[in-house]
Length: 101
Image (tube, rainbow, N blue to C red; front, side, top):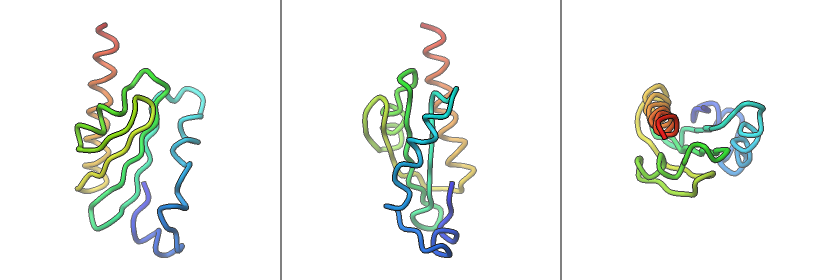
């Protein structure tokens, strides 16, 4: 996660962050990658990528976002810890569903 203060300090715009989540997904052993940045005070833009086992579009839809099985995004309000915890919970639910199939 990157906060707004850090982005402003380094003069980073959202377009500069494109592709980071893809690189995280390519890391060996990573099934689901999440990258988020603070777009406004306690508002985070979330990008997710999946190897296919986790349907990130369902997670994004849960938070009023959208996308596809392997690539999706949304915006979530709250502290960075709340956002990560809420996303992790939804990913965990998907993993449990896959394991119970």
